[in-house]
Amino acid sequence: MGSITPEQLERIGVYTYTDRLRALVILNQFYWDTFAKTYRNSADLITLNHEQAEQLIQRLETDWNKEEFSNRKV
Image (cartoon, rainbow, N blue to C red; front, top):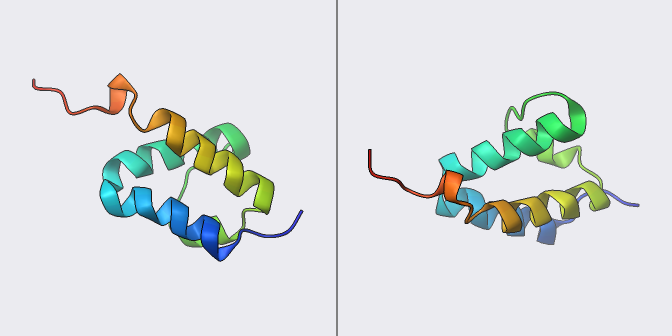
């Protein structure tokens, strides 16, 4: 179980580049569920190990298009 790889960082970066706010919501939920703390900044990603990074990527992939994150008209 090694540290997060550059490829994993790049995969996560695709989400933050596409829609930063949506990605931050998911990142915060992941960090709270996993570590009982909030996501602060990209330096937090460096502390992830390979398995945790894969879990985060999976969470981004599954939560990305959930209705709660879709653009809704108010």
